[in-house]
Image (cartoon, rainbow over all chains, first blue to last red; front, side, top):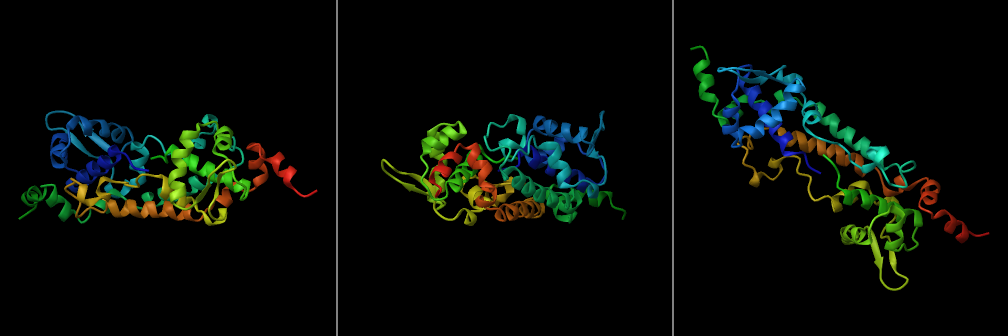
Length: 153
Length: 153
C-alpha cells in the first residue's frame, strides 16, 4: 500500500507555493528545486488546477500559485485529487466483484472504517502545517535569499 | 492507494479456514470456491504460514487450517504479512530520499500518523469478526451441507 509518486510531488509543489506566499512560481523553477522534469510536474498540476487548489497565470511573467490559503488546503484535498483509487478490496465496487461472499462478509466495512480513519488524519493537516517553519524549507529550496531581498530594510 | 490482490485473497483464505473451524481445508477446494488458481493461492499461503497464522499439514489427507484462533488473528496481522510496503512517501526511507526538504518537512510525520490510524482500525478487527455469522458465509462457500452432516443428530 503506497501513495503514488504523483501525490508525493503534489505535496511538494503545494509546499513550494506555500513558501512563496502568493508570489507566482515558474514550473521550471520548481522542477529544478526538486530535480524532476517539467512535463512530469505539468501532469500533476492538471488535477490540482481542475480541483481548485492551484491557480495558473499564463504569459511571459506567468506561473502558478495556490488558489486558496495554504491553511485551507488539507492533505485529504490533495490525495482526493491525485490518487486514482482507494479500492481497498475488489468488493469496494460491488458490481465488479466476483467474490461469493460479497453480500455477507464484513471485510469491506472494516476496510472502509480503516480508510476513513486514515482520511480523518489527512483532513486534520493542511499544506500550511507542512510548510511551517518556512525558514528551513525556504532555505532548502533556495528561496531564502530572495525573501530577504524583498523584505523591507 | 490500494491493498494488493494478494492481501484480499489472504483475507478470503483465512475466512474460509475460520468457517471450517479447525477442520483441514484442501487448497484445491479453496481455489474452487473463489474461482482462482491453486498456484496463486500457494504464493499467498507462504507468508501466512511463515507468519504463523496458517498451519500446513502435509500428506494425502493434508491441508491447511488456522494456526491460532480466528479471534486472535487481526486484519493488521494479515496486511503486515502480505503487503510489500507501506511507504506513504519516498521520504519514509530517509536514506533513499532525494527530496531537499527531508530534514524539515512535516509530511512524513503526518502520513505516519494517518497510517497509524489506519493500522489501529485494522488491529481492532479479527478474522473471526469478518467470518461471523458463519451461516451466510458457510452457505455461500458450499460448506453448509457438510456442517449439517457433521452435526450431532
